[in-house]
Length: 592
Image (cartoon, rainbow, N blue to C red; front, side, top):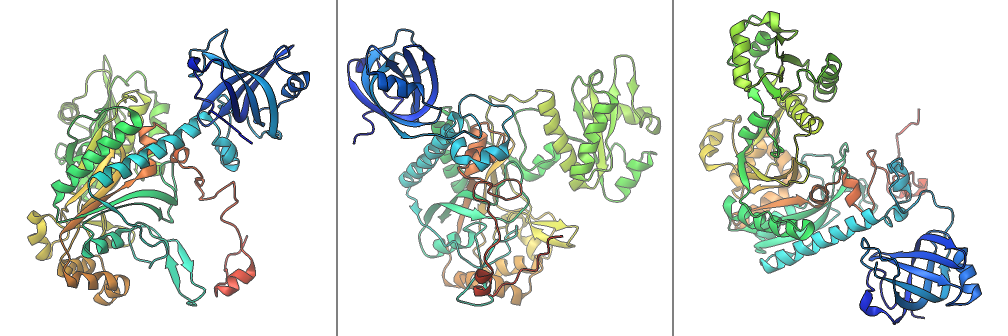
């Protein structure tokens, strides 16, 4: 049997007169007495099918009249010119008059309608019936764009001389930042594999192995709290190169990014990506992935207020904190106390800020709950520093540096959206470079690697590191940001085993612990490791930004919910007790 001679987005006016066979899903159906109109749909589009009593048999027309939406059918018919053409449809100049029909598979009552836009359709329902959700034009288009993106990557990397090499999924648990997913071994009782957070160690070992230019579209796994742009399993474009410096990697990656961007969006990024040091990004935007499509920059007030009599500010400075502000344009009349209180609660709940001070610059007066605690000179200096104008509101946060940057950085983004300051049709790439090597974790009372522990230190700061300094040590790092989302990050790696051992020591690993966790990796560096560096892109997040989607789940075929669940397959789920016994595992979970 021939199911199709053409797909349903293919027929044109030059095909008039042909006898064709088409198969697909019934998208919509309209009955007009002796005429039944069916829009038949497949992955490539729609074609209008006419069931006319004057053109075919009565039983064919009666069968067509009984069709339900999403029933799978096969029709044979003649292509004719359409009387009322549809300029919005590629096949809108023609229609097919059916001679034969066969129902290949009927459709039961649908949990939701496939066609149209249902604003009330819950994401949970969509994910439970993901195979139906994928039929929707938006989702099938997103999957097409995903395919186009991955093919563009493969074509570019092949032409650039990279080898596609796959690395293990079952590997060893190593501390790389997030929590590992563990897999118990039945054969080796009491031991566990870990699913890779990234192929980081293996790609560096491939450089030691002489591969020189490697890439892989790899599945990665991180057991961490989820959000709109994060999944427990995700797809990563992993890249590594030997005998390179930072500029070599960044230039290659920038070429790749422009090529993929054009293939997916159809737009050109024909400019050199701006570069911004990490410190500058934090100072100006409170974020290491700033959205530079709009201004609203943060201004530091610590020096201005270092002698203030306002105890909230003075005690913050005395305790090593900072004070920053930003000016929200034309909001003095627009924002009531209730609106400001909502912003304050947002910063308190999600970013740990103690409060949100403000100064309104009205037409006739300056008003603020903290004005009575500040001198006229201090208020004037704050206005000048923030470059605020009449009609603006100055928002101020005083706290530890990390909290201030996180809170005001988030407030900046929210104001950008709420005030329509962001051009949603614009794309802005940005390199954020020179991240610090170490970040102090207040909860664990120890230093952690800002990027990862294999990142090389900038030549200018290496002597300070070797002399024992840990704070303010910069690295040869580079993150690629698009519209405020980090889509890729990488670095030039440490290839000196002595320096690598010192980094582990600063991170709190004893020599024995380092050997236990990374012994095979450190051993490899004894046998002639070349200078090397690379980068990894988050495929899903990058595609999400390019397609202007709000959630990463809309660009992944079968994603998990925010609770890490697959509603369609009901994973994760309990397993048979026998399976646990075979793996020498006993669950301690109690359902309270």
